[in-house]
Structures are given as structure tokens and as C-alpha cells.
Length: 124
Image (cartoon, rainbow, N blue to C red; front, side):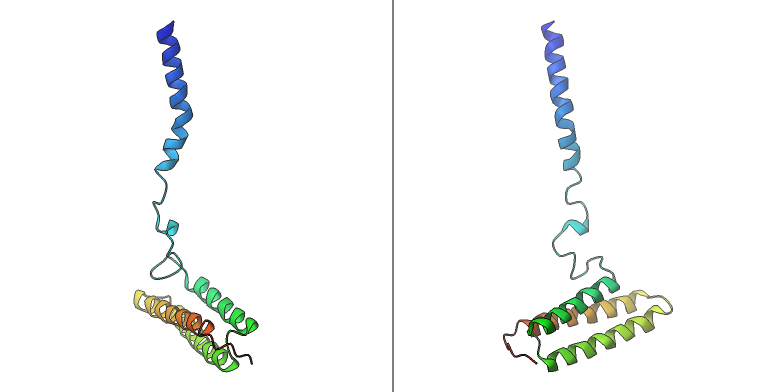
């Protein structure tokens, strides 16, 4: 009887702890779980990156972190990259074209961040 009770308790303890062990093997097994997902080689689509950059531009203009001149220059660069991406996408992106557009968007994102936080603090 004691052996049967000990076996039942051991089996119950194992059954309760099994889900915790099962979930542990799936932690941090994909690139998307890491912190640098949005930048530098992440699996980000071009459209998602464009949307994020456009949002950053709008926030910078609305809050006054970007001057009128800075915003105009950055918006012109954004429009240029958007036209380039459209032209490349008409036949489908090859690897070089995709990398080119992503690199330009990454540089523009860095430039927007630099201009927003350069502490000019001038409006208009």
C-alpha cells in the first residue's frame, strides 16, 4: 500500500510539473523574441518599416522636434525611397533591391532619430 501511495504521489508531482518543463523548451527559440527585431537584419517588411518611419516623421513635426526645413528634407528623402521601392516592386524584389531599400530606410530612420533629438528645439 505504501509503495502504491508513493508511486501515485510521484506520478501526480510529475504530471503537475510536466507543463512547466514543456513550455521551457520554446523560450527564445526564434529571432523575433530578441530585442533587435525592428532593426539591423530583422524580419521586418519594407511596408512596416516605411509606416514606422512615417509615424516618426509625423510625431517629430507635431511635437516641434523637427523644424520645417528638416521635416521637408526628410519627407523628400522618404518620398524618394518610396518611389524607388515602388519601382523595384513592380517586377518583384530581388535580394539586392530589397537590401538596398532596407539600407536606405535604415539610414533615414537613423537620420530622423538624430534630427529629432539634436536639441535644436525650434518650431516652424
